[in-house]
Length: 305
Image (cartoon, rainbow, N blue to C red; front, side):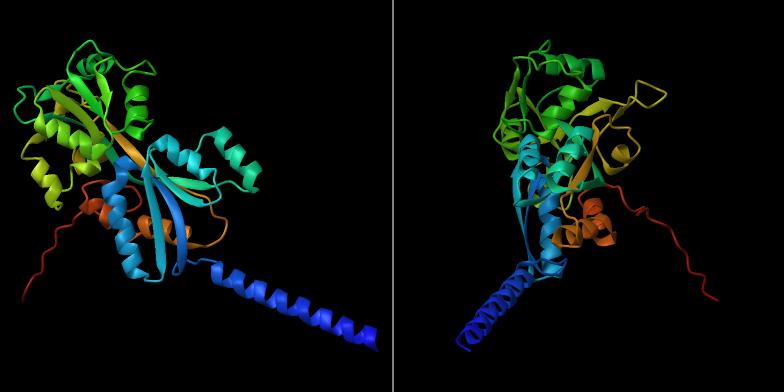
């Protein structure tokens, strides 16, 4: 009898612990409308992603998306950590990266394009130059043209990688190319010195509804670059939603999400939000080109009898 009583007591303790653990697990599990996740975002996309997070958390008050803004290379390092659920960068996963995560996680993270951004060449309003051919841009980045150029970070940002891959074809930057601490520092340096040019993501300077950005445009301007898809190579384009959409502006680039989630959690909810109408309208309002939805304006007329 004593043995039977001890067995019943042991069973009760195990059952209680099991119920408690299950309850804790249910409490910790996030959903699209509840919970907390950590994401990493390339710093050049910060302004528009801050707007996306603000709107999502306002729509779902029980959610918290904690974003770290850093270089693209650091975002990919974070993706390998258990604590980081999603990254927002300018490229998708390479085949070997997919294979690595499949081996590590037993499933492949999925990724896709949310919007199209651009890398913008900035100059002080007092500079005489206003147009750059692609050949001249290559000379500027390679150091043949000695104007000081400032990038948007000291590490491997998406802007640095994009320019090195697309313009220099993997060659090294010239000694005239320097690194700023952030995109904001690039804006400040170009604003205060007519001898300096700089590169930032379009999201830092293209939002006409952002008072801080429009104030910067009183001191700096975006440079016209040669249109490489136009039949007339003498045409030059300013970065804009239209020129990014139709690739008239040659330094257009994608904004990717990479999501490490095999169930419908908060990461999936946030990704869906950015992919559907409300999120796509936020990209559009920031003057980026939405990738998931066609949001063209249509004219209408009402006939009154």
